[in-house]
Image (cartoon, rainbow, N blue to C red; front, top):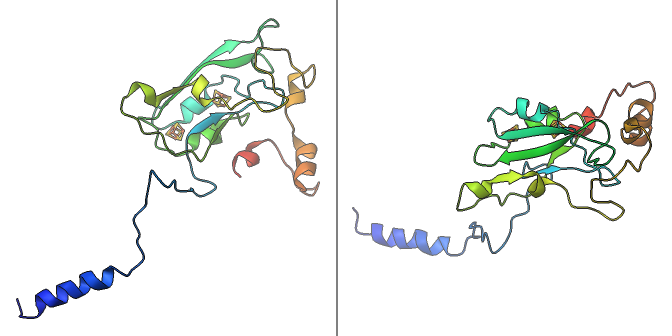
Length: 188
Ligand code: SF4
Ligand code: SF4
C-alpha cells in the first residue's frame, strides 16, 4: 500500500458525497411502475356489475406455475353472477407461486382477467398470499350493481360482447381489416 492510498480512498468517499443518491426511499415513497407492469390480477365486471369470468378454467390451464384454482358454477335465473350459463364460483390465485408472466390473461376468452399495476403483494404469512375471488374482483363502479342480479344489458349473453365490425368501428380500424375477437384487446 502506498503512502497516499488512504488519502485517495477518502477522496473517493468525498466525491461520492456530492453524487445523486440512487437509493429508493421505499416504502415511504412509492415507486410508480411502468403502465404495462404485471402486478396483482383483477377480475373484471361488465358495465352492469355482472362478472366477466365464466369459470372456463382456461387461465388455470395456461398457468405454468399452477398458481390458479377455478371452480365454475351454474347461473340460475334466481342467482345470476355473469351473463350466460356459467360463472367463476371459486377463484384463487396463489401469489407464492405466481411469476407474473401474464399467460393467464392472454388465455382468458372474456377479458375477465387482467393485471393491475399493484405490486405490494408481500406478506408475513402464506395464507394471506392466496388471494380469493373477493380479493380479486374489481370494485363496483357507479351504475354497477352487486351480483347476483338479472342481465341488464340485454336478454341475450351476446349483448355483452362486442365483436367484428363493431369492435373495429370503436377502434377506428378500417372495415377491410378483419377483427375476430377480443384477443387483440387483451394484447394491448
Ligand atoms: S401471471 Fe403467470 S404465473 Fe401468475 S397466475 Fe398468471 S399464468 Fe400463472
Ligand atoms: S378468468 Fe377468464 S380464463 Fe379464467 S376462468 Fe374466468 S373466464 Fe375463464
